[in-house]
Image (cartoon, rainbow, N blue to C red; front, side, top):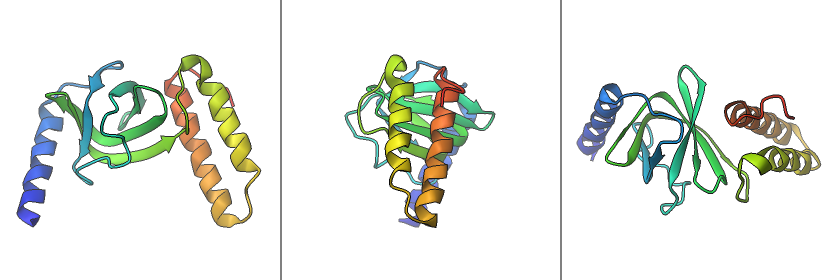
Length: 147
């Protein structure tokens, strides 16, 4: 089992090293990372679309319907319609489909609903983290500073 996992991780590292950069708009049918070997939270039937770079070592992706956004860090590449990444970053589920027009409004509504439910330190920390994730999404998807 460990040997299989190590071999898979090495294979993913090779794809990321040999692959050219993933371009915004590029599509994939599934995603795999060297660290987790899967994205179980991403529905299997969902097509994945590259949104663009968050920073030099982090790339943002979303499901085609715009409901789930996630990032991959430390390297990525594509081969045979599969997105390969080194380290999974954040995963954010807006709870409904979005597009560029509705993204800012949905993010504001999400944060407004969540801020009403802050009852303790843990919840406040989670809200802060979610706010940062939304800011990353909006910075790439053309809505920077919209919150």
